[in-house]
Structures are given as C-alpha cells and as structure tokens.
Length: 104
Image 1 (cartoon, helix red, strand yellow):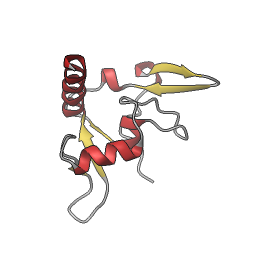
Image 2 (tube, helix red, strand yellow):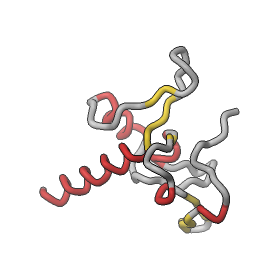
Image 3 (cartoon, one colour):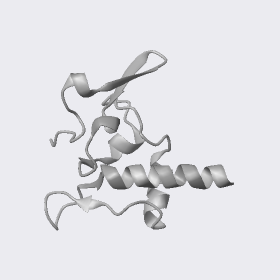
Image 4 (tube, rainbow, N blue to C red):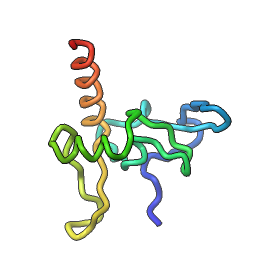
C-alpha cells in the first residue's frame, strides 16, 4: 500500500478537532512542488486527515471533468490510475475560488 505523501513528522502537523475525532493536516507547511492525493484535498475520516477544501468526492470529480480543477499528475508511470496534485496549484485554485466567491 502506498503511503500518504502528505504525512510528515508529527511536529509539522496542524491539529483540527471535529466533534469526538482529531484530524491532522500539514498542508500549510508543504512546499509548492509537493504532491498530495485526493484524500488530502477532500479529507478522509478513516485516515483522520482534515480537508483542505470542504467538498465531497462528487463535487471534486465534477470540477475535474469540467476542467475547473488543476491538472492531475500521474504517479508511478503512464499505465497507472494513481494521481496527485501539486500543492502550489491547489493553493492557487483555492485562492482564485475564494476571490470568485467574494465577487458574487
């Protein structure tokens, strides 16, 4: 099983409390060229990862299909379904998303 690329040492993790569970994220401390996976973006209760963007899987898939989300990077070669996204592109997307929502 491939390890989550977003899990670093515990001292670099931010802690977020949701009801009875504690979720962690180190998104703010990652370099722009780091690669993160889907569960790092939308969160994962099983892995106790807090979402960077609080949307569901369907919304993310719709944005990807419509070309409104940054292009994924294939991990492990051409014949793999494993993909990730660059942190810098996700940060830029979220900043632009916030600006568009503020303008409405």
